[in-house]
Length: 185
Image (cartoon, rainbow, N blue to C red; front, side):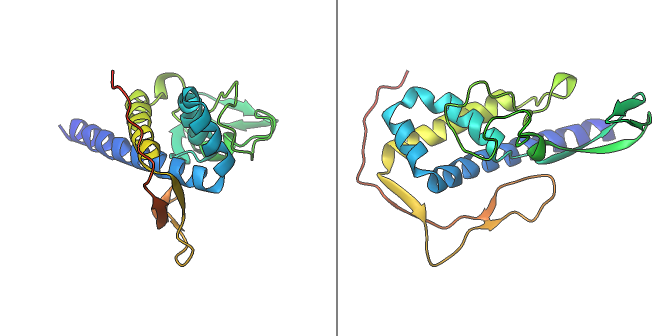
């Protein structure tokens, strides 16, 4: 029963943390890269790849602990079976050997082989839901606002956590003169 309760606590925490930070990180990424927001407004079909780029560029989950099940050889060193390792997902998703212009936010990046939602048997159970929630939230937000910017008198503050990444506080200013009616399917 303790394992089941722990698992449900993990699911609840992971679902809220991932989605909240994904949406907040998307807003911050577009504020910091207004040309990419214009690009998305000009071509809404880029929303899916834009979400993937936010997930890579500002990975909501930055680190995770794993335990090796066997000896692993890595860069001439052996990590023994049973060792705990801290996998730095955020760093891996900015690896210049894996991503051209790794520190550039590009909503049309293709391919985008990030590992923000894990890999293999550890792939995030809620990845599809986080993507869907981000798609709905960002579509509605950008349909309703004309402009968005950081509030100049109050800086944004990052979360004080090792394993998650996103703003703890994100004061913004926006104008909402834009109103686009669209058919929902």
